[in-house]
Amino acid sequence: MPKMKTKSSAKKRFKLTGTGKIKRKHAFKSHILTKKSKKRKLALTHTTTVDEADENNVKLMLRLK
Image (tube, rainbow, N blue to C red; front, side, top):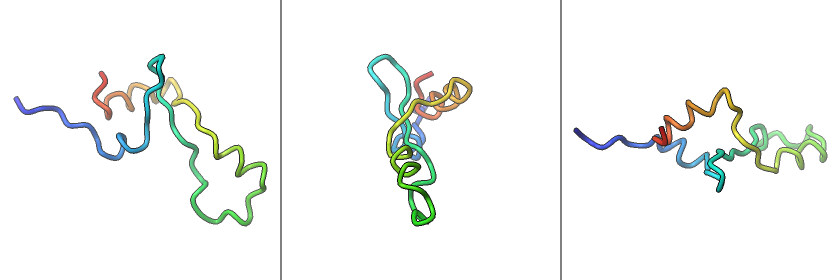
């Protein structure tokens, strides 16, 4: 059997934390930033964790499951 490959797009977008959670960046911070408030842009800068509902799909893409 051939090896299972990870999805390259997922590999670039997600990182694992020490406790096994998956970190992600916020969307909507790449362009059209003039109409967004400074507070909103600052909030989008910080990373967050993947929601429990999506965690299984992300783990499959990263071949962690």
